[in-house]
Image (cartoon, rainbow, N blue to C red; front, side, top):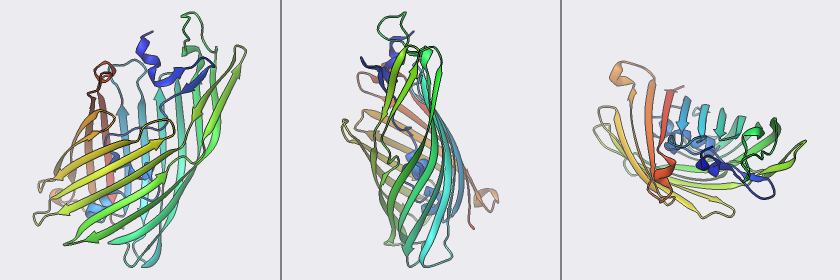
Length: 314
């Protein structure tokens, strides 16, 4: 077995494992509601589309055996017919596999928005609730002794999960948009203990805190420039900051780039079909590429991500 394939889920002396705690994304703006249940979709902020469905596939560390693979499906709705107080709703399905460990979660999302006109500004509070299945393919987890494995059969456990978020967005200047938010997408910290005839081992999952902020600068030619920042904190790890810049051209193509304090550089590009193709709604396709420039990065390999989004105004 390639010695690097255990890096995402190190087996400690006491048979404890810490897998990739939460799924990562290159195009965070397209999966904002998975990180912060109170967040607005990027299509709502940029084009006013208040009903969105999307899917994404991410292959992380492609050159590494057992690298994470993540698939997501999401839906989001913002009621813009009422002023003062209105609601948002949605949900998502996520599946993640990292080496011998993985999880699948199904979540619902509900929240409220306080503001004079939810199309232009609001303060949103929301939560997600769902059920997560954690999995370990135990016979693929090797210890220091090549002939020693933790177990001989797959292990699964089901746990409830809850996420909380707050989010504020405001139209400023000549129709530009500012937003910021704070969230804990997994409120429950879990110690998952698995047992079989060979003994016990466990996976520890800790809470993550996310912060976000961004600004849309719109131009007269139907283009815009978006700057965004993400902050992530988990106990026992340094704060990670991710800075991004994206330009949407008048021809419906966008280009973006970003860098993180975790020594990652990323690029993204895509296009959308809407009025330019005679459509009443918006179909959007995006691709993201990550590369780590740390000493570990070249060994890990590159990361590829694709997103598909359908947005409507209802």
